[in-house]
Amino acid sequence: MTSFEAFSTYIALKNHFTKKKFDYLKYNGKTRMTHQSFDKRKDKIFFQKLAKHEDVQGFLIANFIKNPKSWIKELVYSEEPEREYKSWMKKQQSLTYLFKEDLSKLLKDFNQNLKIENNQHPVVLKLYLGNRISLETLCILIKMTKTDIYFNKNLKDDPLWEEIELKIKKYTPFLQYNEEKLKKIVLDYFK
Image 1: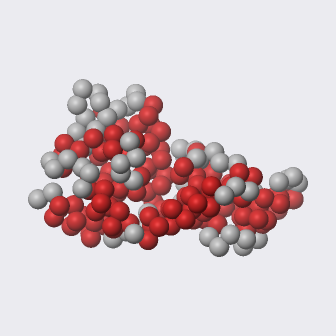
Image 2: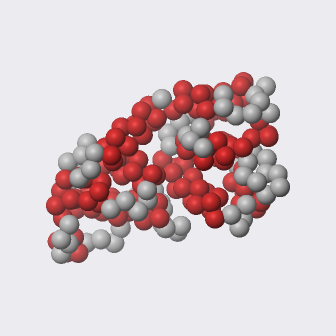
Image 3: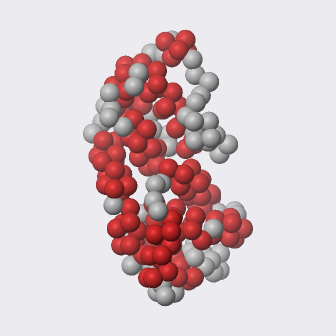
């Protein structure tokens, strides 16, 4: 990957995770950035370093999930972003196992995990906010049950939900998993 390609990927993914209307996948990661605009930048050296990473897209996704406003210098000259990437890769490689483990932390009555009572966050959201279940599990459950519509209706003025909903909406398309397999796991676990 060239430094310009790394720059374009960085800009496109940053826009994806910070702007409601921009969709990285819809535009195939393309931006309006030009070589001329890139050549004028004073931070080209950071993108040269980023371009040497074995998985630029995965590295950026892993770090933009944690902080969508990550600055390029912090990403390439700090050890924490690489640790974040390695942790994210482990989750991707063991997603089914992680999902099963997270299901064990939910209430035995599946519907109670998603129910909103007295304008309080549902159990599944509280578990995520308390770092007891992963963002991946939250994304999968919300996509599987289509509860984002219900949450949006009942938590419409909740700034915390708005922030999490954007994160879920932007991250879910990048998750690679067998939907039928995970659906069966849920059905078997909550029978």
